Amino acid sequence: MGGWYDELRDQGVIAWLNLPGSRILLGPWKHCQNPGFELLQEIHRFFDTTLEGVDTGLAQEPRIHYYMMDGAGGGAWHSADSWPIPASHAQRWYWTGQHKLGGKTPRRQVASHFTVHGSVDCPQGGVGPFMQPCHIAGEGLALTGDRLDRDLTITGNPVVSAPVSADRPDVNVFAYLEDVAPDGSITVVTEGRLKASLAAEATPPFKVPETPWHRAYAEDAHPLQPGQPVTLHFDLMPTSYVFRKGHHVELTFMGADYRERGRDPNIEGARVDFNSTPENPVWIDLPVVTPGA
Image (cartoon, rainbow, N blue to C red; front, side, top):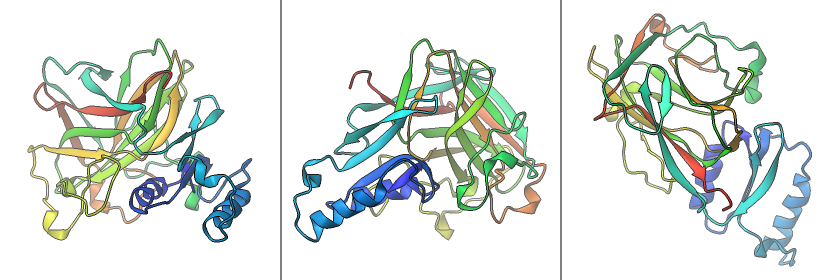
């Protein structure tokens, strides 16, 4: 059991992939919360079925139940028997120019940079296990798609790729997938992060949901060299969300997050450069659900 606003939701999906016969329930909740849902009844059904042999109907139901958030505070429950869900496919959006996201690779190099400010704060983000990522206006690099002419539904793990260089031996890079409403308000849908020195990928020793995997061993660490880009390829945590018609999809990169622990104090003032080229562009793969599927 987990929630789309729980820091551990990706671990629940990975556990489901690796534990035969397991089931997973993902709602629109924060850590250890399930308002409006009778979780205790579902727990009783599970144990009655698996320990007592009672036919509760659970064995005939799909092994995955997840709540698709509609982008307006509501949503609906869906089910599946596999993850990623069969109805989803990767739709790639590129940094095409200026601060734009689009469906075609950039025709020429696009470059930008930001300065890391470790003092970022988010008073409305919550505390402890309920902390949520926040959009910090004016910080980082925000890339925005055109106004949507129809609803866009995603379910699964978005994946990003970004060639990055810095003037420090290491930086933390955070990526936020955001929903920009017609009134300009911004909702963080999901997020991911990677330490640049640990960009090396490896083959996971267990099943993962078709996402990059970084084992982060000591021998995998490679400090950054000034002016030499390294491609950061990492996933954002899973979600199920509808971007409404008239809204914009936004991808924002940051060098600090108010939820960080053990931040390197020497990172303050670091310059982080992004370069998107036709050969090695900045992109995000969205797990788009086929309409009507």
